[in-house]
Image 1 (tube, one colour):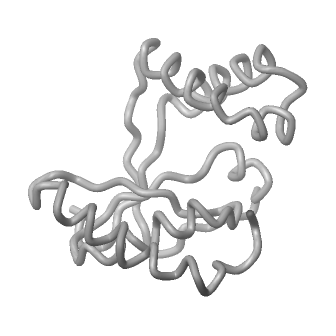
Image 2 (tube, rainbow, N blue to C red):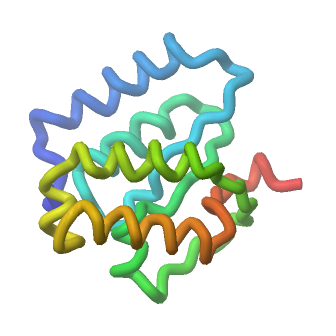
Length: 136
């Protein structure tokens, strides 16, 4: 999950990138993970999104972000996007579906829900980092 992308899976970057290009209209803002934790699925997703040849916004992969306290997004600027209570609940429910994440980062789903709620409240929402083409 955290090693190099297996050579047999590198074709997924092209296939997923093509699918995204076919399905996402050119005027839609694409948001993808920075892949901070090095998770292969996040890295494949980022690489596929970068094949779109359009400006991207990135999110810092939570909770992997917490394991990278000195992380510096470099040339990227950020914008803060508030998240509604319904949005936080959807986020919590999505994480709850990834049972391996629960046991890796939290004692149980209740703890996960409390920590995501606290993170969203502390941050004031979710930050998106913008490629230079999107900076104003």
